[in-house]
Length: 341
Picture 1 (tube, rainbow, N blue to C red):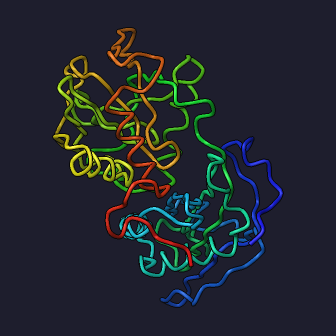
Picture 2: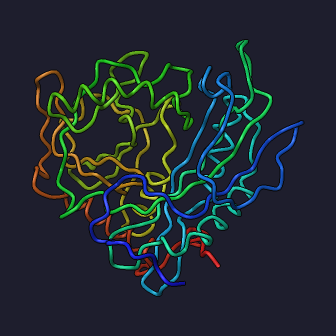
Picture 3: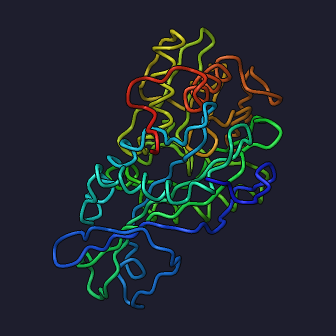
């Protein structure tokens, strides 16, 4: 398929309408068959459940062109599983992961002309979401829902290379101890907006949240899990029931163990021990790894030996290996790469 006339090298990370999206509606106790449509607008009641009580969950993943010219997605089955868990937690009817993967494949194939070419650094971002669509005035789950997927071509998260960022310890809690921190609900991100705007105004790139119960343990940032590298090359990630199970983080753990021979620990990480780590990075779909050069704890600077100029050596190996798997230059574990036929 001939590609759209887009300046791929100068794309930003923002929304650009594509030709097609996928829509399925839940009514009378069942999801319909779903369809690829062209209309990008949604008409709902002013009393819709999503507007009144924020009953919505979402996912994020990418499609891209590998070095051998195939259009692929990365581990979409895990996005489907996570959406199932998110929906169940908010009493939204589960959209089965098998149908999720099929819907992703259909909408990417329909928008193949918007998938950036290999080597451009750009990708096709995919946003699946579900929301309560019928009127709800009492505090209760909606009766009707819509599942949609839209896509948009986006540029590389880091233009000119990934420079280490500075993050701060936040005074706010991202999630309650037994709340919704472990699902991808819109309400979690709404709660982080005040803190992230304030962080940016004060010169920080992100907020790092502590556990909401004791405020002594590292959790995650507003939009990404965090990883640390010890001085002897061990990968350490926070263990908590109130952080989102990042697909990128889980993939990096596997890469560290099985490709790079690194020791890995998933455990509680105290803020007091962060000074002892050699490298840090935020991991997520958009950037894969955003290197962290500095954490600021109320004026006290925790500077990692890897510095503020480039990724640390272990972080760089993790990044290169995982992006190599995604782009086809490194052999992928079975089932990780989903080819769009």
